[in-house]
Amino acid sequence: MKTEPIVLASDPADPEDFDVSADGLDRGRKARLIRTARIGLGLSQAEFAGRFKVPIGTLRDWEQARTSAPDFAIAYVRVIARHPDMVASIVA
Image (cartoon, rainbow, N blue to C red; front, side, top):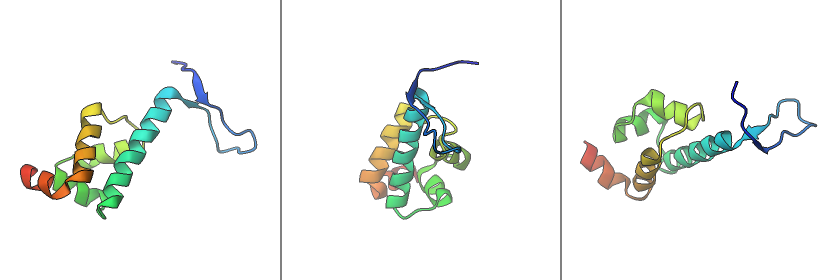
């Protein structure tokens, strides 16, 4: 098993907390950015996925930090957050 340096140690007082690696922290930050953009637009995961042509399973994996969204996807989500109607008209 691959061991990465821990950047955020678990809280010993919380039995459900866990150590977080740099990769895990990066996945979590990207997940938050994507989820925040979607919620800011008032869209469900299914609505966001359909409107912006993102596979819903991929969107769920990114939002739940199961997989890390690639940098191009993060850039795409940032553009969507700023210009949702323009992006929707282009991908339609």
